[in-house]
Image (cartoon, rainbow, N blue to C red):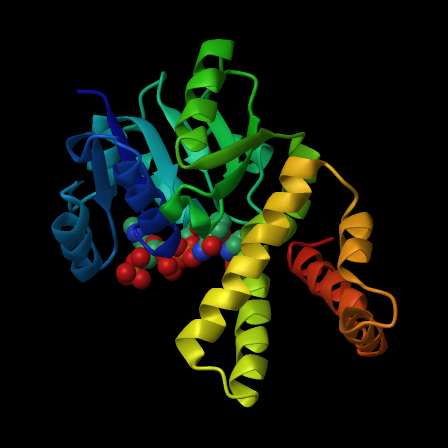
Length: 263
Ligand SMILES: NC(=O)C1=CN([C@@H]2O[C@H](COP(=O)(O)OP(=O)(O)OC[C@H]3O[C@@H](n4cnc5c(N)ncnc54)[C@H](OP(=O)(O)O)[C@@H]3O)[C@@H](O)[C@H]2O)C=CC1
Ligand SMILES: O=C(O)[C@@H]1CCC=N1
């Protein structure tokens, strides 16, 4: 059986693995390695996937290989696996700030590289993964990768030069959304709402608003205006958010993310 492998089995790899298994990919098809053994044991128990001790085993066994270690580990891991990778293997680079050209140079030969920027909601089938491909990947292979990521959310093929922006706005942003939901729920608790109810109400409002943007195709400002009744309560909050620099806080969060990637 053709296998899909993960080198580095931390938070992002687990989200992809969990999402794939929930979406119906066979656990026997998935193989993972990791520096420490305890995470692998947990993945094996939770999802029934295969685990191996060496990164080289992943390189030898798998037709799709995720490099799901942190960016600083890329040079050493590529050095370790470059001679075991088959010519036809699809290598998926998910690390923030890691581009195609620098990793082609690390392999030092023609290898098929996919730059992918997923986010953790792949675990619940609502991920967003931005994708770019190097020149050695066929149309059929591109389709295969797009289908894989569409099975755990939505895939967007973008120009590689936009990948760092996609990392900030698609990869990192779930963390911002969780902070927003948590803050909203804290405010509800302040006014006496039980915490569980507060999380449900805040999260469902966020989910519904996101769906409105995606499904109506309306400008977010128009959707916002429709919530603000004249002389009502919402416009009071909107005015307050503007005074607190809400929009600027988000833009500065993305700016600092981009700066960390060298922009
Ligand atoms: N988290 C996210 O939402 C997203 C993450 N990414 C990218 O995914 C990658 C992983 O991030 P994340 O999962 O958050 O980080 P984690 O630290 O959770 O996972 C990294 C894993 O790599 C393992 N590891 C370290 N060195 C090696 C090695 N030499 N061989 C094998 N495994 C090794 C670590 O093992 P140990 O158990 O010993 O620590 C750890 O489990 C990063 O490059 C990040 O940029 C991309 C998009 C979103
Ligand atoms: O925090 C990080 O570096 C990674 C990249 C995108 C999301 N998480």
